[in-house]
Image (cartoon, rainbow, N blue to C red):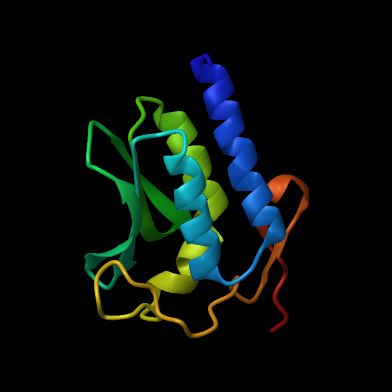
Length: 141
C-alpha cells in the first residue's frame, strides 16, 4: 500500500472514531490504537501546568515527528507519530484537540500512562460537525 493510501486510511479511521464520540479517554485510546495499526509509534502527552504528562501510547519510540495539540490557541498536549509528514500529524492533532483539552486540565490520573475513569467528554461549547471536525459553539454569557 502506498503512503498516500496509508495516510488516507489512517485519517478515515480517526474520523470514524471521532464521529462515534464517547468519553475522551476512550476516544483517544481508540485513536492511538487505530494509528498504531499503520505506524510503529504513537503517543499523546498532556500539558498540565508547565509539564507534559504521559497519555496513551503504543509501540516503541522510533524516528518521529512531534506536533503540538492546540485548542483555540491553548497548547493542551503533544502528539508523537512515527512519520515524516508533519502536516498529517498536525491534521490529526487538530482533530483530537477537544478530547485532549478534556484531559489536560488536571482531570487525568496521577499515574503516568493511565487516564482517570471520571466522565470526561468533549468540553462544553464544542460540537462535532460532519467529517469528524470539531468546532467550538457560541457560548452564552
